Image 1 (cartoon, rainbow, N blue to C red):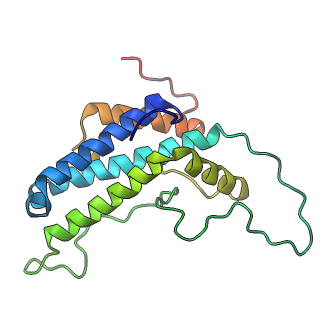
Image 2: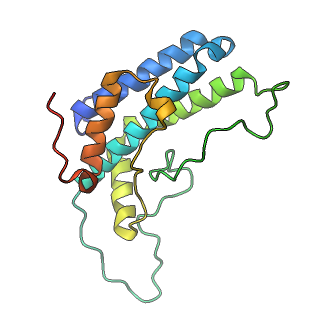
Length: 194
């Protein structure tokens, strides 16, 4: 991923570095060594997804959309809608259920680490694809937000269990992006200058 021609390169490059570092960590561990890094990898993936969502929301807020055309009776209403296979990342953040073991897994027969490694690699590939063309996803989000106000970000982007595993620079970047993506939630809170 090259930062040339990407909007807000100061934000883009830091998120891209996190995604690249996670990819290197996963490739170095491989499926057979994933169990040793599973908690760290999941925390970094959750952080990367939250950062990408906030980045896309920041970009969408900067887009000036043309006014809506007059609705014609009987005209199809699918202009600007997402086509199948076009949304590799959900841009809303529903309330997360508490962490628990999946029903299909038992202590005697847990899911194999190779499966989790493959799932995280696939999620990382989706984030990489979004970061390759963030402007397109931001425009899609801006069009969706014009139709509905239900596309929101959670107050807390990550579970505390994930936050504890992240280094301070990622936490600081998360706060910065959250402030930019949700300015109404941060209104009246002075920025930390320490």
